[in-house]
Length: 409
Image (cartoon, rainbow, N blue to C red; front, side):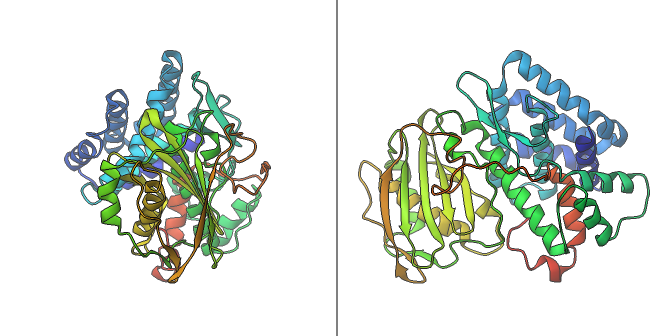
């Protein structure tokens, strides 16, 4: 309940300066293209409620989630709820620039908090839901930030009660109590970014992870500030050409996926794993780099690509990634494109293509580097992303601090 309380405070505070007329209009334009109207009506109404009834929204959000998930469980509509969550994550990209960012991120916050209520055991805070088996049962595994929302939740309660805001040292002390050792504002900002990338990836892929795609579940977070592909180019293809070819010449990925291994002289790029979910019209990817793994999907029919690199503040990174992903996919089309000349700093890198093992084992890869074995991380860590984000934003308001970080909010 405390996590929902903290999220509710954050959402209400974000919407407090928006008129109800503007709020309802922006919510409509954000959610109108999401096909799962049973859920959009409920979440739209909650967000409108946040704008007009502070106390009822804040103290009623926990009950909203409980009632919603109980009904989903009784009616066996997990697949529809998961699809709704994935669609909300996609709308973040598709509505950017046309809908207020405050509305977009408030809707995302409200939606992502649902994840706290989906675990079979709500009190197993070190567990996260990653997908749905074909028989309708929920897939769970380790959640790497199980206890880290306790400090921001305490801070939110203090502020809501009118108490003075804690100093940075006092905030760091709260984190130390749950085993998280932060020494600076920069550490907190990095920690916030790591969580945001992880939960965004989990929610984005939620509709596509089942027992056949378990190895593409983003269990291991991307724990680095480094942004890949800053020096990447493709010498013989352009993104616009590949986008045009993708619609008329969609890739045909083998049933159990492909692995592209890179012999990258810089050591940055390691591998790209692809696995197609034919019944849903998407190709899942896992890009393995020296800094960690990035996850998402490509929808060949529309050309849409989900990627956290779309959030980076460094110009051109997402486009470089899209070029790499589409180039590799189109080598597997019925009429394959000429072999892409992939380069780092203008020097070509070699690529080897491997067929994947036909029996993906969750306990072997789990979204980890293909050379690593599965190990559980039992270090105490965080969940409520929203409260942590608000704390990090407050501490990184100084432009000199914020400028050090490459991913956008």
